[in-house]
Length: 309
Image (cartoon, rainbow, N blue to C red; front, side, top):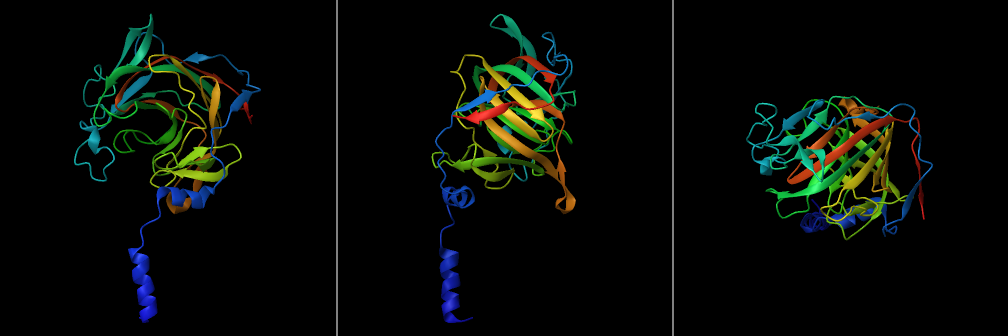
């Protein structure tokens, strides 16, 4: 090899890898990422009767699934353990209990997993209320409380890290509620984003009018942060509204739209892309005690309009 080319190759090999901010800047540019004020308008009327997915008495209609006994191995390529699945009783993980004078779905959070609803849903408005409990568990005991509303759920239980089914995530995490996450390597989500260097990784935040990005699990852009934090203080109830029409959705937190996604899809063998337009919902268990109540769904035939002000 030419000495000059050899020296260049050595220098390139020795050069530090680009930081997440540098990598993200190459994708979304330097567009402003200050939190936008987004407003929900022209909210669709239901085209049919509302349906309660939680009956207030028991877990009828909900199927529990648990991941590994030690959640710290969840994201390892070789966890060296077998998921619990449905091999043991789960009354100590998921239950119906009273809180603040009403019955609610209780998720302990110590063992990671999910409650998966039986209904295969499409073209709907889902509303639920949640609030954080007091308990936190390793390996997230000292991190922000974390959970999630997973929708368009499909595939095999435990197919994702032995713990969840492939889906699109409406993140429920202190400071990040409404974030969009691809749950599963074959799930694809399109949205628009801008650079936000204050975030750890990926340093990108939803921005209406931002650069188009695709969220892919296992890539730099495996999630996109919410447009702004609209969650109420710990101990208070929050209202989530999820509007879904085909392969598009709007995430709303306490009346504030914080994420618009489209192009929801799965990618199969040979890169064939199939629109993801329906599926089940999952309520996650991921390290934090969480309460859910008033879970309802109603059919819609269009999405609300979201404007930036």
